Length: 165
Image (tube, rainbow, N blue to C red; front, side, top):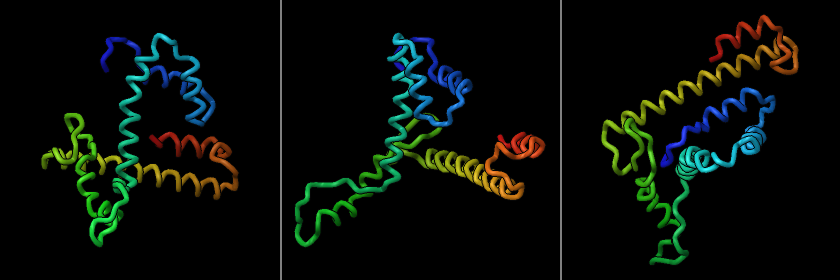
């Protein structure tokens, strides 16, 4: 961030999320925008753009699509084949979170790679735990013959959701 404002977008959004009864992030985002004082627009944009840039970069990396060069023939090789074969060069430009910030894959050390791997292992572990939790809730919904999680008996919810996080 380049400004010295004390405005904290995370806290502002958290406050609105806590008060909201709408599960749709797009609708909550609109409420955040509606309630955001104009004097904090730049601060909010600075604080949110780094995350947005990260998400877009990750989307491109996950898509695994090779860069699309000009559609010209080089000998017997098509431009699509060339693009696929050259994808590794583009992969070196992948931005990766490491212990002391962000690096391009091409600049990462063995320690950086170990950190990135551990970080992803941790994320995967948390995702697997949530997947097990959601499957368990699904079995409870079916087992109790109810339509939604909110329809489960309070005792069941207190037991299961009290240890969810």
